[in-house]
Length: 311
Ligand code: EPU
Image 1 (spheres, rainbow, N blue to C red):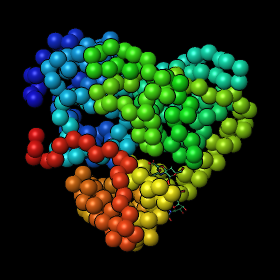
Image 2 (tube, helix red, strand yellow; image 1 turned 90 degrees about the vertical axis):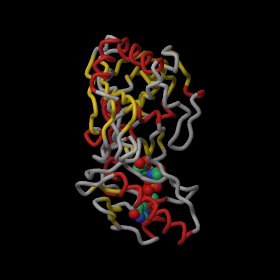
Image 3 (cartoon, rainbow, N blue to C red; image 1 turned 180 degrees about the horizontal axis):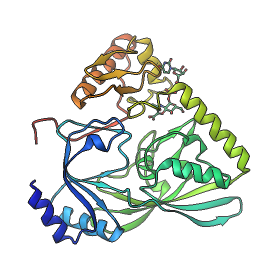
Image 4 (spheres, rainbow, N blue to C red; image 1 turned 90 degrees about the horizontal axis):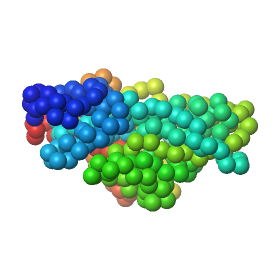
């Protein structure tokens, strides 16, 4: 794709917002890793997003919805097609009450911690266990983010989604096919907003639980470092972090990627890490866990993009 083609897209679909060409994804991921995306689009309203979606589908250009890049590893060759960023969509609005429950309408680009803080201020219970999880509400729903026994699916009523034909439809939470750190939402489905159901509670009690969860997270996880959170899923009943630790991998490194000495399921970018080294370290660690315990680890982070030199 060329810069001229990108300018043509802006004109052809009357794009409103910001569109960049060959944008380094290392600027848009918490790991600070990732080659350039052909197109990086930040539509400023849903109508413009709809026109862009339509154009990309008709012209067979791949699209990749991006939350805030906190649970992904983008390969060194970057992302083919168009990355769509939802940072213009960040509204949280009250959406009614029903007995002991309060409903909120939340745009998918809303930072998850803003929703957590808003709920805490209002004394709404249900998302305090998500304290400290980075990323957007859309990304959290896509990967069914969770911690301390809380999962975003448990407070979700429905989502508004722009599907393959550019139509907006409401999908109920029970039809989304949620599982442990996954949903049935397709990569071509764009999450626009969500309806969230929270239980009205005492403000100081929600606040106390929030503080405890955040404290536990700060003590156990290197949340101040550049990472993508837990790299591997927990195999049934066994924490991956414990297995990696006991296989002797803490502190292991390849290039500038290192297994955290705080929590072994976090890999840290110490400065100039690349995706190839990150993937090599994943293989090395999974290999050691497999040979020590006979257990196969599955990635929890999503690996996307093309290898260097392929595109
Ligand atoms: N442990 C070790 N060594 C380590 C790390 C952990 O021995 O290096 C031990 C701990 O001492 C503990 C056990 O492993 O006994 C479990 O560790 P922890 O309580 O930190 O929880 P986890 O199972 O590693 C899960 C989620 C986290 C979530 C926490 C808190 C997964 C893969 N991980 O971690 O989610 O924040 O529980 O609820 O499901 C994420 O999804 O990115 C993530 C970080």
